[in-house]
Image (tube, rainbow over all chains, first blue to last red; front, side, top):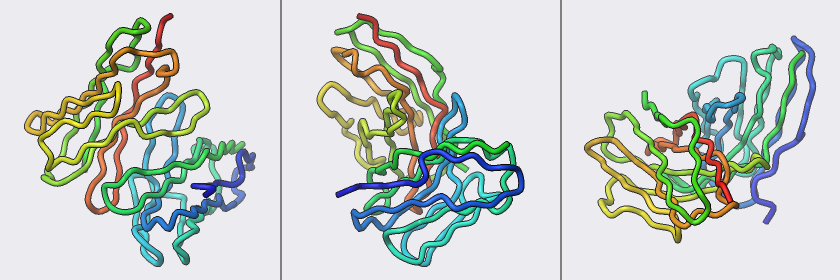
Length: 112
Length: 113
């Protein structure tokens, strides 16, 4: 099992550009989440999904879109990048509610 | 909305000694889950220990144990016989039944040889 994979590992964007961060898991997990981690801080929930076709907003959803068309994939779209979105982004998945989350290695995003 | 507070930004411990990391949370729910995750310099988040709120017994995992006080909304992590490999940032996290998670800001643990 590859676990949770994220691509790219590092990305530089200019203000106003759009991009999609990819996340995939091969553990047949129902729950998936996207977080951002700013320097010296904890993880903040952006969006999450409890199954294919079901998504909901987290704590900091503005400027981001998600969709969940398959159990395996949960892409995060930045609509119009802003310097405030410079962060490390983590994707996580879990088998069900209250279960341990398994995290991807993260994507470092720099918006100039 | 749930909040998670880790009041110790940094802690240090001598190798082989015991250290306790603090975590408090605020919630109006009765059923939830609490976690401690570890983030070493590699940035990979790793589960340390998990506690179900409806269970009164404190979770234990080898050298790691928790002191879960539901009424006080407190969930501290005790690391016994600290090892150099325990050096990392530790995050306390609260998970709801609906699938939402809230993390604290973390405690950086230094282990001195």
